[in-house]
Image 1 (tube, rainbow, N blue to C red):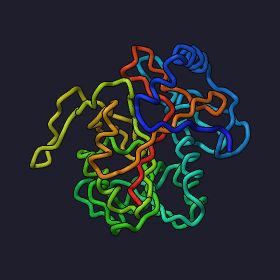
Image 2: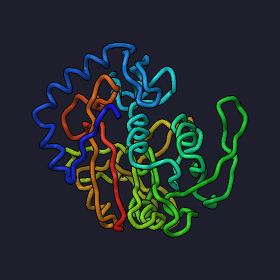
Image 3: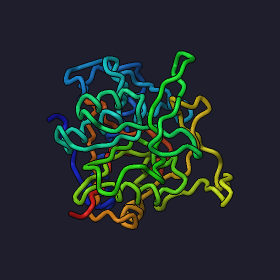
Image 4: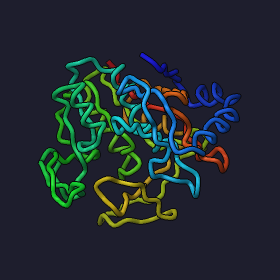
Length: 293
């Protein structure tokens, strides 16, 4: 299945492999970012489609390409297509899966690929995981979905073959607890497959804020909000994950960790187009964490 990802067992192996190509990547990505759209291959539609460059996220005046290159046929942006592709390769039809989103194009296509996949959204910190709640829709009405708090999920121990999440972990107050929950609900040999804003050249993870014992937010760095389809005001970002992220996965109990990189401009898989140094440059990467068999 085109395109192919290369999987690396360590962060150093990944950054070493792309070191000589970073300059070329930046030139290519700047050219893409200068236009409104490109013709590219969509891995979901399985054909050449129009990919809209600007998905709404910017670094100053520069387009964040990871959030853009939105297929105008299916609605999947770059990172969502990459996660979809990795999941199709990792999980056969009939796998017991959960995806921590419910209303997105990715959720719709995941449900078609794996009937019975358990979809959910985060409602609020007082909601009970596994219960259904109302969420606003885009037309002033409401829709319903299961609530799951990644830190306290309702799934039984060893009940899932895989769990998918798409730029969720950075918004979880206790990321270690969230990863430990993913480990708990997976069968032996099960896989957590996910994306997040991950900065392999950032030496260590930045903790931007935390919750105190009363649940009040204590900000340690200036506020960073990410766009969210359910919350017009945006969603708070607790972490900028760096090169030490594999250590956190190990502490959560995962025995095998791999970083899948697929730089392929024709498929719309490029860097985030960050042009102010390397620390916050993101590669087109999916992370795979496997529980010991």
